[in-house]
Amino acid sequence: QQCETFGLHPGLPFVKQLYDGGEAAFVSNIGPLAAPMTPAEFRRGNVTSCKNLFSHSDQVIAASTLQCQLAGTRNGGVGGRIADALSAKNVRTSSFSLDGVETWPQGLHTDITIVDRSRGVPRLDRHDKMKDVISGIAKTQHKNIYCEEYVKQFSAAIESSEQLGGMLDNATLVTTYPIQRSSIGQQLQQVARLMATRKERRAERDIFFVQTRGWDMHNEAVNELREKFQELNGALQDFVAEVKAQGLWDSTVMSTHSDFGRTLTSNGQGTDHAWA
Image 1 (cartoon, helix red, strand yellow):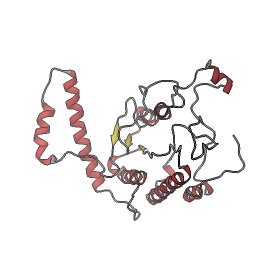
Image 2 (cartoon, helix red, strand yellow):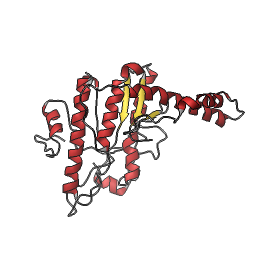
Image 3 (spheres, rainbow, N blue to C red):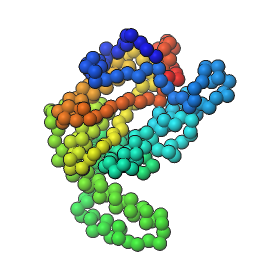
Image 4 (cartoon, rainbow, N blue to C red):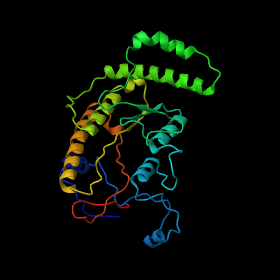
């Protein structure tokens, strides 16, 4: 769909600045599609289509996997599969989630490293006093494959959290990064801190997943949308300033993704679910 003029909400002035500077782009009129179809074919149901098209939970999965015709998440998420492909070419790649366990950053061979938006890397309390106990658990031999795998994962989680936690504790940001009040602002600030540890981690590629909720505005859309956009705009402005200061902006790609769009017509107080 080609348009000569685009409208951008006044709550997103920094996004407009990026767009005007050739640093942001919009892809319009897209949505989940398993195969080309017309509206009539969709209504008849004789063409392969996405599972449960107007269900939030199903379309969150579809947006995370980009395989909307398949139920479930057995093939991993988009970010995780990208990490798998990079790792297969011997590119040192990590996948992080700043919003808990999610499908998008999970690969078939790449596991997620979870970083809390406010506390950073969760670490074991009194680790120094517990090291001998952990070592004993790790060295214990079991005659059960499930026990062996549990011990392996437990030991790896403790070790990796201590290593990454130590790096984050020493991470220094270049800008005077303002204190973030919003969830998305806190997540992006932690991403900036992780990016600052890239040399210590010997990172070649990193994939980060952040998430902001609260866009299902069937009611009170005018005020709530303005507040959400202003919140997002401020978080992006602080994050981009830091990434540019770190000298990483030209090697960073940011993309947004949602489960589905909204109707163009109002229901009186907001908008309802739409395909694109």
